[in-house]
Structure formats: C-alpha cells, structure tokens
Length: 87
Image (cartoon, rainbow, N blue to C red):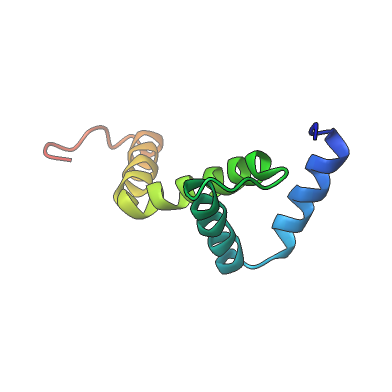
C-alpha cells in the first residue's frame, strides 16, 4: 500500500487526538509487533511520527539543564553581563 498525502494527514490527525500515554503505548506495541515479524500497514509513518515526538521528550528529560543553560547564556549576553567564570 503506497502512502499518499491524504493517508499521512489522517494518521497525523489521529495521533494528535489520542493522549500522550496512548501514543507511547502505540509506539511500544508497533515496535513489539515488528520484533515479532508482524507487519502493519502504514506502521512506518506512525513510527516516524511517534519516534520523533518521544525522542525529543526523552532528550529533554536526559538533559534538562541544557535548555536552561542556553536561555541563561542568551540573557547574560542581552544584559551585557558577559561570561561568568565556571559557568
């Protein structure tokens, strides 16, 4: 089955409507099915969407200080405070 733009749009709309927990469960279940050798139509589209979402979330959880550090560095520059030693 070829992936057409309408189909992709419908999948994206569905994924936006379900809860984050349901999206995570769907990701786990599709990955489990693939490990067992089962195939599901459009699973490549669904996995791409969900992996992108949860990769970003997991990255933020692993490095929560990175975003804050970047924001503080920008604020220091705007306020003319420059670089603090040890920061």
